Length: 296
Image (cartoon, rainbow, N blue to C red; front, side, top):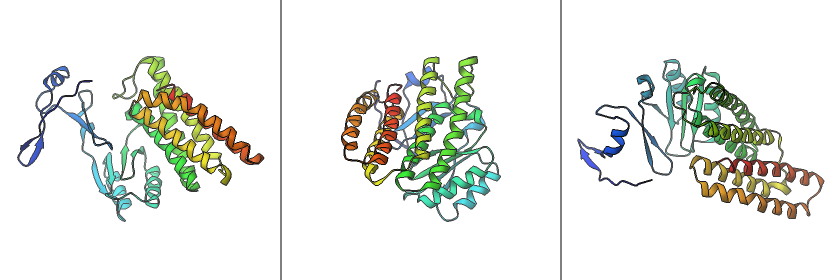
């Protein structure tokens, strides 16, 4: 991948940068051609041509501040027909507010939280056919990461709520993959993957779903809590490797499974029967994580 450097230009008080001609020619872009800008948490911006998207899909997000009025504003905007709503905050959005937002979003027809970080929640109203497949996979991984955190913080209501979200998104993902493998047609106009990638995505998400099912029923004990946190960290490494397409991290994460299995054996020598059972349950998660790493 070649890096191309440009200097920012000032025009009318706003900063601009020119796009490489080889890129604009490749995608037949010209003045007023639509493009999508994705602002990432690592400080980078990704630019994609949106030539395949209908004009109505290019509407800007409605941005709401994550304050005490945000639920009311969310309901008003949703019922007024807004399809893309972004809730943001300079500070971390607290757990209680996140829970309330999720609860009300679940009550709205065809509406989902499609992206979530510490400082924002992206909400979209759509039919399942309009959800990009790769965004579905990201959401599935994010939900399981949230379930790990919920269980660690003893937030069982949030844990069960996230599990219901996991089941819903996994069902939609299966529809996407099955339809493509049977017909060769993408359900979402923004999907783009090969048959081999489709199979890998399906197996990766199946392993992710199994981890969610284990977490939904798991009850960590004091004697196993440290190993639980290591298992959570291991999952997040796999998640990061997939989202960043980091083959190197995926490889080293794949190797890490044997280290965790050895550590678990050493820990179990000092534990009672119930704690040993808990460690064995966590090792099922570790094995699933290794299997996911092999699919990246």
